[in-house]
Image (cartoon, rainbow, N blue to C red):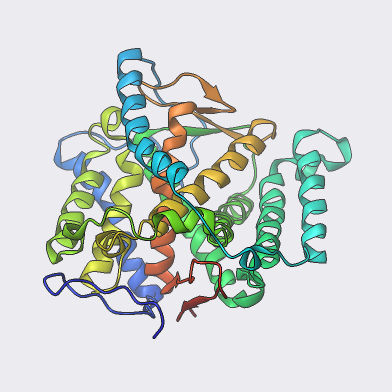
Length: 395
C-alpha cells in the first residue's frame, strides 16, 4: 500500500489523496472575504479607507517605519527560540542513507541554457545599457523565468522528475494562479504599507497590468519548484518525518478556530496596522487551512498531528531560498521595492530588515496551501531517497 497518513479515530478524518481542485467561481468566492474584510473592519470601526484605495494597488509612497530596540529584541528572541529546536534536532540527527539513492543524474542541457539566461538577465538588471532602456524596468520576470527553469533542472538532475517536464499544464496553471495570488497581497499591502516600489515607469493602464501581472506570475512556480527540489534531499527530509506529533491540531475544531482567527485578523489589520501587520501573511493562511478542514481534506496540520513536519519546514525553507534571490536581485534593479516596517526597521540585508526574513517561513507554507486549495495538487514524495513522484489530480 502506498504511503498514506492515518489519523486517530477522534480526529475529523480528511480525504485521502488526491485532492480536488476548485472551479474559477469557487476561487472567486474564496477571494471575496479576503478583499472585503479589511475595508469592512475599517468602516465598522468608523475610520476612513486609505487614500487612493483600489483593487489594483501598487504603492509608490513609503509607509511609517520605526526602530524600537526593546521591541526588536523581543521579536528576535521569539524568532530565535522558535527556530532553535528545529536546528538542534537537525544537527543532532544521526543520518544514514543508501549511497546509491543519492547519486545524481547528469545535469540537463536545458538547465545550462537556463543558467546562461539567468546570468545574462542579472547583468541586464544591474546595468543601464542605453539600447536596453525600454525594457530596463521589466527585468524581474526575465530573472525569475531563468530561476524557475534552473531549479527544475536541479530537481531533474536528482530525481529524473520536475514540474516543467512532468506536469507542464499544472505549471501553466501555477503561473496564472500566482498572478492573482500576489495581486491580492498588493491589495492588502495598502492597509499596512509595509513595502513600496521605486522607479515605476509611467505607462498605460494596459501595460501596467500586463507587465506587473507577468512579474507576479513567477512567485508560486518559483517557490513550488524550489520546494520540489528540496524534497529530493533525504538529509533535509528524514529528520522531520516522525518528530513531535501534535495530535490536537487534527481535531475538527481546529478548522473553525482557523476560520475565526483568519477572519478576525483580516478585519483588524486596517484598524491597527502598526501592531498587526504580520497578520497580512498569517490570516490568509488561516482561512485557506480552514477551507481544507471544511472540505475534509488532509492539511499540513493533520500531518503535524502525526509528527510529519516536512511540508511545513520544507515549504518555509523553499520560500526563504527564493526570498534570498528576490532580495538580492531587487537590490540592484532599476524598478525595485523598499520596506517600511514598524518597530524593526534595522540591520537590513539588501532592502529587507533582517527580522523581516522570518516572514518568508509562513509565506512558503501559504504558497503550498494555496496550490493545494486552488489546484487540488500536492506533493507526496516518498521522501526517503527511493523513486520519487508527484501525485494529485491537478488540471
